[in-house]
Image (cartoon, rainbow, N blue to C red; front, side):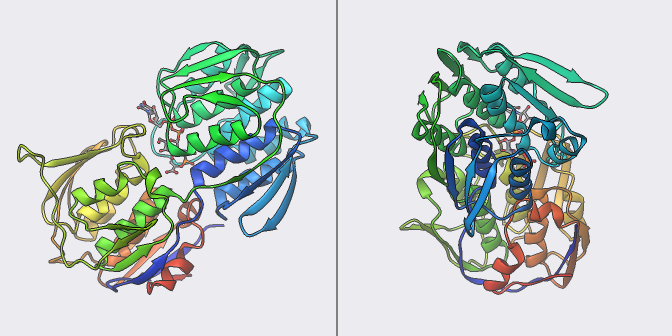
Length: 435
Ligand SMILES: CC(=O)N[C@H]1[C@@H](OP(=O)(O)OP(=O)(O)OC[C@H]2O[C@@H](n3ccc(=O)[nH]c3=O)[C@H](O)[C@@H]2O)O[C@H](CO)[C@@H](O)[C@@H]1O
Ligand SMILES: C=C(OP(=O)(O)O)C(=O)O
């Protein structure tokens, strides 16, 4: 089911907004429930399409799923059903999201076999899986890919720990290999591991389950395999991509907004990156307070050259917030180069911003130069289609700042990642309807 938002922009918003539990953490954590036959209780799970799909897949696989309350579920994987995993139905279900790929590591480690269709997720450029499979093969799995069916399978009588040098610091790839290594025989060391907060959360949860992982937060993880993992409880961090989006929203709409309970210590370079755009924000306890600002001025580099903001694996700036940086820059004073290094199809949505009156030059699929309008001429409302989850939210922010009415179609892409976004925006004064 897809849908449409109608937005009347140009209103100042005011109030408090609380970030949802992190989407990309939830996808890792939910896959980890397969690693034990005991109960795993997970809290602060966002109620969003991708996560709900993954919970449905776990249920169809035979995992007992109990809802304890909003965002609070208990999972028990004491018996599973491989008929479903080999079925046509799973080929469709698994292909609907990217996060499902992280079922492979746990499935392989616990049951000695794993199957997966080519996963879905954002169409934002090539999204290869080589790192995942190279790592799992190094642990001893036999890999097979059915090119006609786009179906992957892995088998292993046993997994044996070893030193693995990843060719890139893939987030979901590292999660997959860590989960498999947790139940492998002996010691695994993963170098060039991704180390973002959600992966740290996964490792900490696995340790609470009885795993023995050290080096958490660094790019060298050491995992002493164990034979059995037990149940645990886990609570998701607030979603850092949402937090960044609300900072951008406040600046674009000249609004005074407090973002509650952000877990500041896990935000890395995100707050300072927005400050480089001239946006004032203050840490207040564990909240972020953004005052209403008439203008914000983009800083230059020390040598006077134009500021570049680019993505990099953690602790660099997350690629998932570059579309927000880009849209916010359209109303800043000054110029900026946005360089999306990881994905090659994530900047094409700038066409829509240009239609709305933004001054942007798309240099190539990876780079866009934005010349800010300094809030002197507002963007104009228009009709648009959300191309992917983050560009969709960026367009939504543009529409909330724009003069007049905007229509955004294909909001399924936004609902994949943001819980009740219209309800939460309305609560701080936005004029947004789901039509
Ligand atoms: C479900 C989930 O958690 N999705 C996130 C996850 O996707 P995902 O785990 O799929 O992304 P990866 O970390 O594997 O890589 C993302 C892209 O960056 C490239 N790459 C990666 C590492 C590197 O050192 N150099 C490099 O160029 C890869 O080739 C790929 O094109 O991490 C991405 C990168 O933070 C985020 O955008 C996604 O939202
Ligand atoms: C790219 C993203 O999601 P996925 O990896 O699930 O497609 C994202 O969360 O920005």
